[in-house]
Length: 105
Image 1 (cartoon, rainbow, N blue to C red):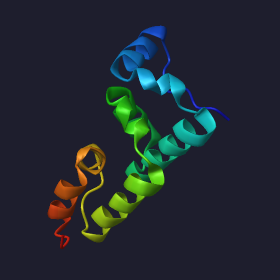
Image 2 (image 1 turned 90 degrees about the vertical axis):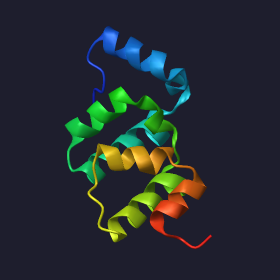
Image 3 (image 1 turned 90 degrees about the horizontal axis):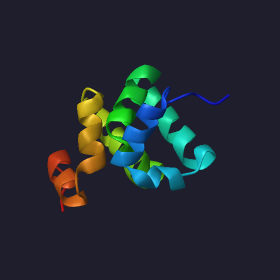
Image 4 (image 1 turned 180 degrees about the vertical axis):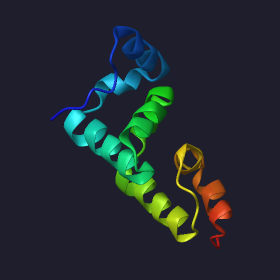
């Protein structure tokens, strides 16, 4: 069953304007698994959809190489998992992430 992220042509146009490469991503291997990941992490699919509509580039990050390992680290440090946390998880460079996590470089 496919979920409807965007309900109007206007919403679609806005998201494509923000992140044109979205059109090249696979629904089955990227969009659906990524939405599932964010929905589960936030505990609410509507919040995940709203976050992704606001910042669709969040679809472009690797689940296995970036999102899952960083979420695991954030949970280990007992961070609140919310939209702001995902801003850090997705946007921080490796160096900044490691410094934030207190990892020895």
